[in-house]
Amino acid sequence: MLTVFVPKERAGGETRVAITPAAVKSLVKRNIQVRIEAGAGRGAHCVDADYEGAGAGLVADGDIDAAWSEADMVLKVDSPSLDEVAKLREGAVLISFLDPYRNHDLVALLRDRKVSSLAMELIPRISRAQSMDALSSQASIAGYKAALLVAANLDKYCPLLMTAAGTIKPARVVVMGAGVAGLQAVATAKRLGAIVEVSDIRPAVKEEVESLGGTFIELPMKESGEGEGGYARQVSGDFLKKQQAIVAEHVRQADAVITTALVPGKPAPRLVTEQMVKDMREGAVIVDLAVAQGGNCELSEKDQEVVRHGVLIIGPSNLPATMPLDASTVYGRNLVALVQLLVDKEGQLTIDLDDEVIAGALLTHDGTVHHKPTAEAMGEGDATGQGVGEESGKEAGA
Image (tube, rainbow, N blue to C red; front, side, top):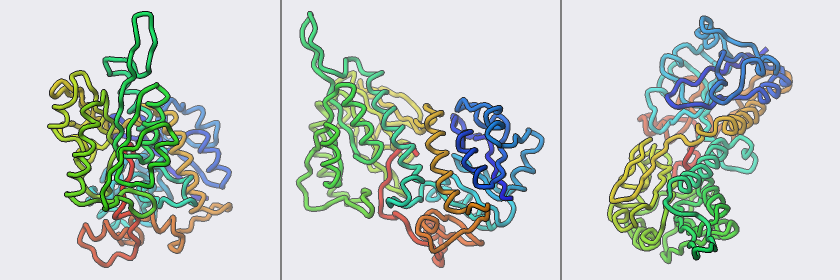
């Protein structure tokens, strides 16, 4: 019987767990033995007794090393440490967010230990893989919480109010990036009653923005930022400067800005300059969801709240961890859908390299770096895998 191990997340501030008790039930029905480290779900308010009731076996502190080395498959949220990877047996499968573009030491160790690793951030954005798209499930939470952070920290109401003391004008919010996180931020800010304007380098997202009640900021230039699969792609520096010039006036009039623009493997594009911050009114708020990759705002600091030129700049790197129950629930469903693609109803594991979802998410396999862009970045030009989204953008919050 295939054995799956779910360890406790040990990264600072991480409250999520890879699978919830409900997800355990789905795996057990697949003839999979599930073992979970005792207390792994505590941060997400999933108790050990519920895991046991769902059919999982608990792993005590003294048995953790053995659980790693005996597992056929390990499911995680954040990247494992090098010490954890060193415990995996040859041929084991690891599924997690792995940050392959920056975590080359980890990728090299996974390769050398002949671990088959699937990176959740590499799941192709195709209709067939929507149920496995953890970037989207986590980015949606990030966008929602970003809008709430704006509302909680602004010095004014979000909605228009007609009061006995006169009319209160609604807050003006500019959202930069209309991916999953950005669109959820738009929807949430609109529900709070704000006037929302949206900047994006992909003209195709205009209809989505307007369907949520936002106003799309037109960029009348010939160059498009539309990439494969509907993602944003990296654009020229000249295009970025022209975009900033157009958006700057909207930012100047805004009470709040939410930025979400990311490009895999590259620093986050700088969309909000220090001069733009200076031009905003005192008391305005910026929430930078791209801070983990350097930030869209020139003045943001990772996991810090700073005031610059009278503007509060918030740089949360892991907003999904502030909603651990629902974040873990949807992430667990993403994992179950992927595992069901890898494991048949009899519990037999097969890594089908002809399957576009598996091939797209596969980072290392059989002693090689399978993901072409990562292999090239590591100087391994003989990679056999495909490059999913090497020109594509992704939403923040994953």
